[in-house]
Figure 1: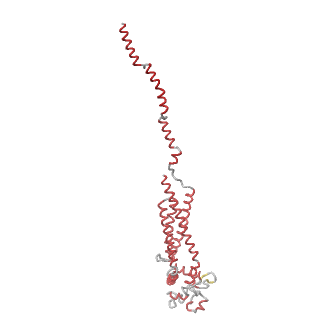
Figure 2: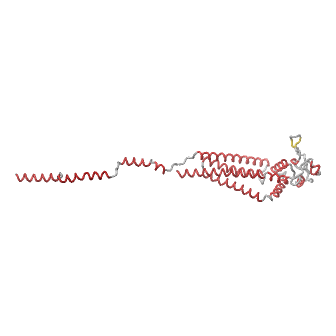
Figure 3: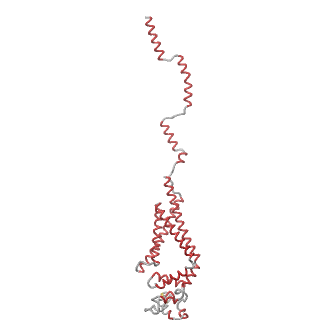
Length: 325
């Protein structure tokens, strides 16, 4: 019994020694707790997944992240002002183009048949060109369309370049301008009855400059209707715009005020019509108005360049907004 009891005690002792740590082990483990605590204190603090998500969201809204973010551009006050100025600029030129188109069409309809190279046809072409370009500029400015704005810029630069080139050519060939002017007036004189637009132009020039014919009033003899050998009431006459006083009773134009003027001598004809030609008068007028004409052409080119600059500013704003998106 004692042996059995001793064996059972030994088993209990062994089991107890296996389940519980010995005193030496407790001392050793007790001494390791401060070391592990110190190591844990040295480790970085790690939060839960929710805290990590919160930290990530906080980092996205940090000032540094906001500074690196791309925010879509909104047009400022300058951009809106340029947009409305460009629209108003193009609208003005659109109205001018439509006015020129209407005047040209009116001249063609009054003439009775379209065609030729008369001023009315030139007005129609100029009105169509200016109207189309200005309409593209209006729509491009209003809808912020890069395609229409690019078309407007290219067309406006083309027109401005042609105007500058024409001015330079006229200045370079200014000595030949007198001969070209004489040829143009001779063509107008020969086709005076056939072309209503040319007749209107000749009458306005002769009336405003107080002249008659090219070099003198006798140049009208080359016209087949005013020649003295021609049949009709206009034979040996000149247009009423050559008369010193073309209005009868101060209100109505007398179409027969210059009847028979080519049969008279210079002294007698001088009391009825202007004797001097229009080439010298028109040349003197052009020389006197050269500064005004050059200033007007320069202002027109500058206005076109201003429209181009406004369109380019809008294109830059559109491109910047597309990049920010």
